[in-house]
Amino acid sequence: MAVVSRPDSAPGSAASSGLQEMARRHLWMHFSRMGSYGTDHEIPIIVRGDGCYVYDDHGNRYLDGLSGLFCVNAGHGRTELGEAAARQVEELDFYTLWSYAHPRAIELAARLASLAPGELNRVFFTSGGSESVESALKLARNYHRVLGKGQKHKVIAREIAYHGTSMGALSATGITELRAQFEPLTPGGCHVPNTNLYRWPEDRHPLWAATAIEERIQFEGPETVAAVILEPVQNAGGCFVPPDGYFERVREICDRYDVLMISDEVICAWGRLGHYFGCERFGYVPDIVTVAKALTSAYAPMGAVIASDAVAAPFMEGDASFAHGFTFAGHPLSSAVAVANLDIYEREDLCGHVRATEGEFRQMLETLYDLPIVGDVRGAGFFQAIELVKDRDTKETFSDEESEDLLRGFLSGELYKRGLICRADDRGDPVVQLAPPLIADTEQFEQIHDVLRGVLTEAWERVGKMKTLPASSPARLRRSSL
Ligand code: PLP
Image 1 (cartoon, rainbow, N blue to C red):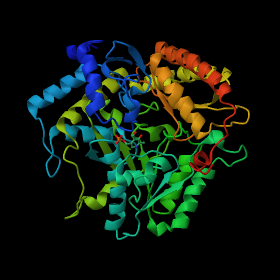
Image 2: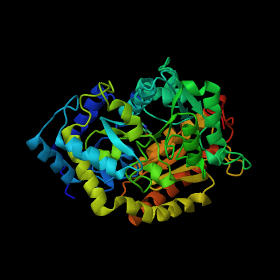
Image 3: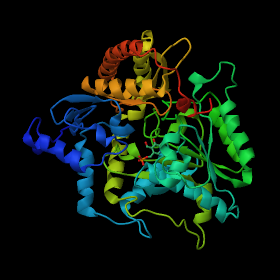
Image 4: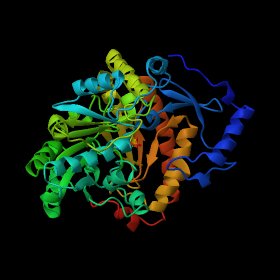
């Protein structure tokens, strides 16, 4: 896998420090505290990638334990994906899917339909995850409307779940801090408990959270509910896996109340859980799947909504149409890259590799249980989280201030300094999340383990010094109804 290094960003060069200044002055980074960057705190500038690793502008190497942002699943530096894009430019640079089609989008749609379970056969392309979720929510509303049930417009999602940033997707997102500052949101978003099993009382019924969906549908009035949206494994909060039977029960509930089941697989598709689609891992077939990110292994922006034949049917007859679209959706370059990416998946059996090695990865993480700060290790496939606690016996978590100090004041920076990119997140209780490229193996698992062991050991010493701070603050408790 050859990787081309850009000479103008060579380590330590004047151009490299010039980039730093230009970034500080002109680049608006997403979800970033821009004010925190200064002469003593550089913006990390990643200049090249190779396999499971990326390099910064000082020449430092990092294990990309987050696959970019859960998306470079085939690993960095796959020049064949760029070559596929280059070949496509020679043939057709761009054409839109607004009333036209082009070969790569057609081939890709057929390929996705052949990989997707059940009758998920109709593919509506987008340019990314938020667009996919936004489109799926509009499709759900519109589907009911064309069938004469226009009152069905609400969407039920789970607390702390992240479904994107556009206004419709944000109304499904269940993170108060992200929603509050943009309210009022698109009406209709309702939230139910998630499957944070670590924090459930031991005697709680395993299907309690599924039943909560039914109760919410009844409370809202089934004639007003269009869809339930959930991830196979919920990312935000730290890789919440479902209890046995959860999705089977949710499927039954959706069928009973004529509510569409949307599986948001922006992260969980494309091998992250060891299957092309996350729903396959848990044995359910949704009505709509949303994907993006690793569809192209992030070498080109692309997403898709995959709808069942039944959901698509009302739009396929007479003069009906789904009055929705995006200029760049199904872009020929992205489509060509996606096809080439799926060729890599097949050739290298990336899903099979995840299934074969996830046990080893998980075991390596579980050895960290000897550190008192490690409360829970959970997840599926190459999508794992470690929840950090103040007291393992009582599962006491950190106050907002402590979490801020631990995650932003120490962990994020320290992990990066020691060569590991992963996510230290406190949208729920504090977790460290790992999602390496699907080509990762023993060598990378060991590196992840070694860096985490060192950093978490020091983090615990830091916790010892903060023990006088108050326990969980009201803000944290408000985040979910556990
Ligand atoms: N849905 C889920 C489950 C996600 O994890 C994300 C992003 O991480 C999105 C939707 C939004 O995707 P994007 O950032 O591509 O808009």
